[in-house]
Length: 171
Image (cartoon, rainbow, N blue to C red):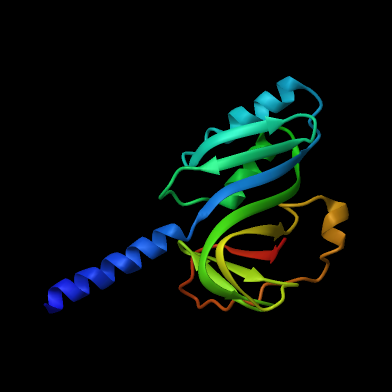
């Protein structure tokens, strides 16, 4: 009976952990002017193994990216692929599915070895999908970054931490 209970608890923990993940990203790609530019960006993004689909909209300069299930999403790599294609990231937002996370200023959450620190966020419990704006020079235009000057992550890490730390706010 103990084994069955432990197995059930382990399954529930794993199942809940898999549901908490990034489902999509929207990137405003600054500098797109033609369909060849759009195609080059799309082709660059498809090089990432965790990307399922990329839809480019040349009218709004937005790339909407969806992800394969059970794959770790690397936000830095997405921004780098846009840069590699010869363009810059004007803004990056991501939809993350949460399971009862309490968010607020100075709150943090872990996702597959990386830390995400909230800023400029009211205390709220996140259940289901929420859109996060990524803050930093890799993820937004210089003009937009000026609005966030001085913002830092308050996520605490120890010396053994090898992941990345991101600053986000809820949109």
